Amino acid sequence: MSESFFKDTAKIPFEGADSNNPLAFRHYDATQMVLGKSMAEHLRFAVCYWHSFNSPGADIFGAGTYDRPWLTEKSLLQARTKMSGAFEFMEKLGVPYFCFHDRDVAPEGDTLKESNENLDQMIGMMEEEMARTGIKLLWGTADLFNHPRFAAGAATNPDPQVFAYAAAQVKHVLEITHRLGGANYVLWGGREGYDSLLHTDLKRETAQLGRFMQLVVEHKHKIGFTGTILIEPKPHEPTKHQYDYDVAAVYAFLQKFDLQDEIKLNVEANHATLAGHSFQHEIATATANGLLGSIDINRGDPQNGWDTDQFANSVEEATLILLEILKAGGLGNGGFNFDAKIRRQSIARDDLFHAHIGSMDVAAQGLLNAARIIEDGHLQELLDARYAGWQGDLGEQMLAGDLSLQQISDLVHSQNLNPEPVSGRQEMLENLLNRYIY
Ligand code: XUL
Ligand code: CO
Image (cartoon, rainbow, N blue to C red; front, side, top):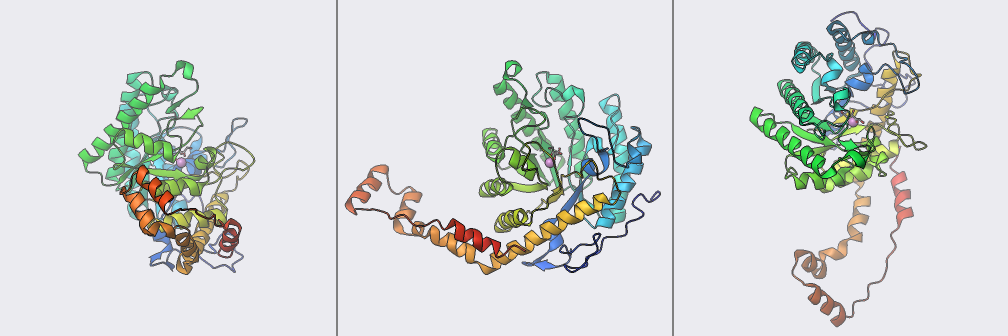
């Protein structure tokens, strides 16, 4: 390994809730067992390459602010310095996984062939770093949104050559993800949407997107990749409207193209709130349909409406999402990817550590709280009691399709059914939830 970049920070220890050391975990103890699995196995944290190592800290009004010496030029030399910094960071943080786009790790060349050659060189180094540290790949993905050729979309571009170029790019990154033993492959519809319907054939573009997804799935099987293909819904930004709007829209899309058994979802917190949903809602909708694959953990800002991608810091939200995840039996192949960026003024090298430590602790608190809720079983008992009527003959027969609308109507009249309203008890339940949140 080359010269240390994060030399002032040592390996982050677990010190427990009483610790005053800001560079220690207070709740995330990788080896602590919770409901029969270690915290590390439940949470499967992944550091994201793009926000943490590729972003210079620029915003639309100003230049980069971060101390990232590997971003001064686009060269393989700098890509190597960046990669050793990235693995040093991940090793010191103690995360088991990472995620990357092709263009995060190697500079784009003048042709796709040249870009692939650059990438292959960096994947060689990545394999060595993965072997040295034991850190694994949660998912790989292709950047189909940065280059001007993708301004009008990748798969949904009006020019079939752009579709073909994007397909060739995804083929290569899917194969690399397979070679690295990646657990998943993510498709985020970066610019798969529109800015104006005046120049957009929506029907044609969504058909293009469906065919593109089918091609990816076909190739996955051809090469024997056993990871999961994931779509990451987002309602807008960068385009005015993205076709993968939210979990429900993607579910309909998957069914239309007969992909519901092939593709799952990577659900992101700030994308959920951009769509007018809570993160909990999006995860619950995904688990209800057997579609939860992985999550991108972050948060928006309640006072403004864009994708601020801040580090998650709400214990209550973490508790609610972990409750959904635990009830669904866990994330399986998925994990918690930090699709989050430190603020533009956070220019000290250790700010990256503080950001990740905080969110990892919050997720650990959420896990412990959710496990207590499940072990107590009280919330579940109240939920079961609310629907208990459906266990009776009437409920079962109606759902099983044994009764027609005529028969149901006859039954209501003959038995003189006159159901009484019952309290929903929302405030009592909210108070109960708060008793588990530490
Ligand atoms: C953008 C976003 C992406 C995907 C990967 O909002 O979330 O970083 O996670 O392409
Ligand atoms: Co994301």
